[in-house]
Image 1: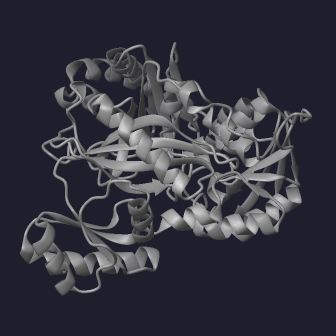
Image 2 (image 1 turned 60 degrees about the vertical axis):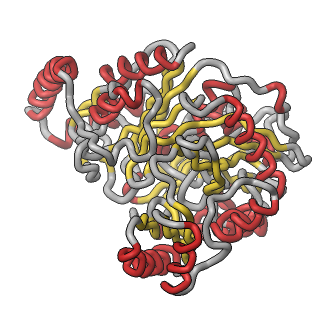
Length: 513
């Protein structure tokens, strides 16, 4: 099924592409759609059964159904996406992040179909996709590495020998791992065998690769990443750092730029190392070099490279004033970067809070229908969201439904603005982690910048201050009254009014089968 919207636009002759398919969903699909519209480029959305009424479908110029709800049968079905791209007559595909964004097979399939992939080359992805090959390349490029095994570790005996060399604690990692899968921290020698076998098992089950490697585990580190950008003319720059140390089980919760605690001389060295890393593989497009920073010794070490746009890219955009998605599009067309290293300066401070449909204390997903939704507004505030009243948050995908990004002339101003924005954010009908964010932002370790990746895990409790309760109780009572009023009407009529009337304000829809 194809959906066409009335806001289709003619493409200016100077636009890099006529039409782009966005091979993703949710807020990132909307983010790319908006960049394309500002450039006068037509957009094509794709959607699964679960996303038929998702906001990214409504905002694109065209939308195509690509399969059942599970991502393996829809958003990861690259053959179907290529088929749709051909049918829609697009000249490029933007993958967003996640799903097919780092899949070299998909990139090559795009090339074979005569479609430009907006992102790095398949060789870039393959170079950095395997952690062992990435480490070898970074060692050659002179990028600092965490002490550990030189390659894959095949037996428990090998693991024990490495431990004798570098000491405990260690971390065992699956070479193809990610998202916290296939990783174990070992603090006692008696735990090595069980952790080793568990990591190999997870590597095989999740990534079809049981190979693991070992590194020294750094207690209470910082997670610092450097945004890099390269073009097809050999230019590579870094766009400064982001601190991503507020995380749980290796999943980021809050990010900020610049880092409040890494010394300036170390930041400069990180930027230089990141550029060396990207240049060593001839990197093209937007990417991120992730470092682990020892808060005690002030050393930093290469961790991995993400060969795609990051979820937290908005905070970089706000502090440097560059639209990274537009830059991706121009670079994919073969144009040189629109800036040089000396042109890029950080200004002010930006913070991003990931708003997820999940319980703020157990972190369990909370799918369901959104009853009321009011996004915060105001100066120096950006909301990337696909939530709206009546929308059914599906169970099949990542629970993140919005990102709140604030900018301030100082870090204190950005934090205050974020607290104000979160107090205004109304989302009822599902559980969200808004109160978790408000608690973190008021914590002394966050306020003084001393937090590390262990911050959430160590003695952190979500406590809602009285001021939060007073605001939320009033909002709850208003939302409850609205809900009670709506429930007097039939469910079908209510759904029609909330969704269909809302849509008709922005465009007319014609369905073609």
